[in-house]
Length: 196
Image (cartoon, rainbow, N blue to C red; front, side):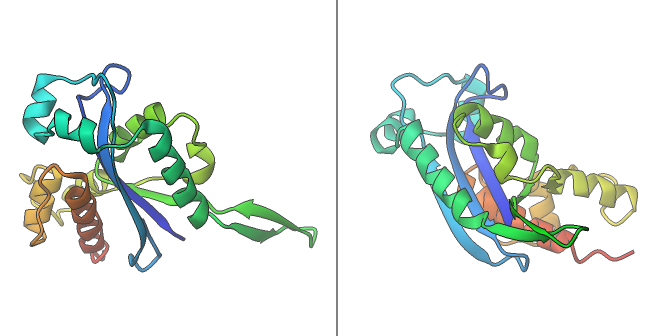
């Protein structure tokens, strides 16, 4: 199994009203070793953003416009990255025959569905449902479970920053996609050490 971990920075919370601005994708093997990565910044003539979001992510839209890439160019890179890591695999059937099926990547993230909604809304030509598995490994959801099992403190707010501090992760997230993606990976690896 390979993992697809990502983080995005956006102009707000609703992908139908505001834009995806930047992101970072990491492909991992089943031992959580980095196989590939792709960072991106989107260039647009007009950005739809909310002031409150810009206060948090501190993205310079002028710099983004000057240094970013078009949605089409980024989508091509994302598609190639995903296809490279979703190689066909032969699956044995009960009747003794085989079929070839692409093995989708396992999604991993912190509040993954938020990021995923922006990816799907922005990069509409990509067949996300075929390339990514349906079940998600989400550190925010796992944190809630670990709180229920009394493994994590009950008063710990499960933000990525708080979880990173709790687990002693040195390179703390800072609302940049690359750091937040890397922090998510490290938090998940720490969570996997939990045993009943």
